[in-house]
Length: 205
Figure (cartoon, rainbow, N blue to C red):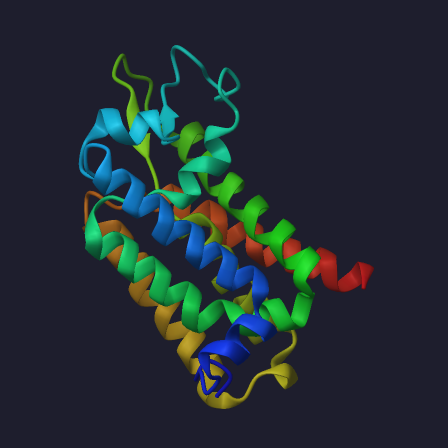
């Protein structure tokens, strides 16, 4: 079972430096949000880099393109932050080992950007701007990569790990559909990007 973490804190930092850095940034940015107005305050989220879905005013989000990335490190409330950090902590390390540190950070960021982009494209034309934050696009990219392995490279995963990947994806997508606050398209976009990017990176390797 590759998703069970046996490493000590020091070993985890040494083996998975990119995942450790992503977790640290998430925690630091959440602390900053809480200290400067709260993580539930839309104006505060916007100030610190939330992604803005506003199809009429900026159809491709190019006026402030950095928000595609900065929004990946912001979270709304403790539950949102802890759930995403737990997912990163447990499920991302095996992928960092598979891809290598440099390709992994490129992969993670591209999946997050893809999730935000699909969310923007699928937003109904509206006069109202909507904010989107969270690491879910990158995390679903990780799950998308493992889905690629489950379907096309089964020999790389044991049976328990394959079942875990499928179960998490099914539960996650069901939650995304039925919980209104969750950005379904960001999850789908990140997942599809992860599936495709992992295949491309493996071919180049």
